[in-house]
Length: 310
Ligand code: TUI
Image 1 (cartoon, rainbow, N blue to C red):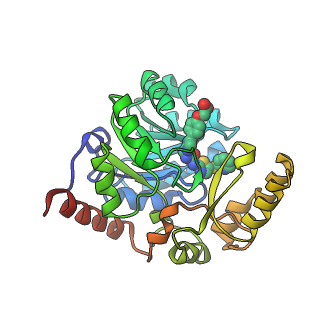
Image 2: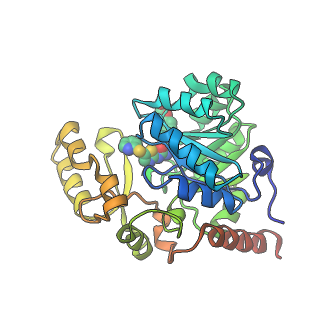
């Protein structure tokens, strides 16, 4: 049966589990697999050119007839064109990250799209509700990639109290216990990224998956705090060099040279030495590769036992 919430109803999905819009990782194989498993698969547009995003949407449709979404990364200079493609293609759901999507809200609402901004603060959640968002993802600093500063434990209940629209919890959730805890904080669904990096259907290079699987609780590091773009990644040679340069006050441009293309290197080439291994703090809990169906069903079974004593 599964747990039905305002979010399963809003999105027409079976389980209240949404996949994170991870750059390079969240492409059509993963998105279609998550949607086919009853969650909401997401294509991460990241820095991809608009026509590549269109192709990804069309590919996803070949592999699933279930709802799926696109994450629009707002720091991408191409975001306006990507926003347009998403509207033209009649995508059902958009999530956004790393910025304020207010300027695209009218375009998306007119196209009948459900808009779910990812926020890292109560103020941004309130602003998004006013702008017409259908729900928000409250993402804690435990997450991988670009992060805010509040923890999931503190952010989620404060956002729940501040807005009337449904809240989706993200950051540090990787199993049924995390799911159940999110429900206790008032969330109506969870968004997970790190656990889906190691999905069988994820195209991420084996070396990267192995680093996630072997990661311990304190193996992540935050680079870029001094640049205003903090990014959580697993520790390696790249992070050691980056953090050293940051502490020496090296400029933004030189730092960006170090990370430029480094996520692609990690995901596609399996370069776990110089690559950027974005992952959340929950990586330490994740122990094996499983299909998206196995991941979602395991989490839902565990959560139902905890929440309803089944
Ligand atoms: O967006 C994410 N996670 C990401 S995006 C990404 S790609 C990237 N690469 C290099 C530099 C920057 C990004 C990797 N991981 N998560 C959602 C998220 N959004 N976390 C925090 C925020 C956020 C931050 C500020 C949302 C809104 C916001 O508003 C600022 C403003 O006022 O515009």
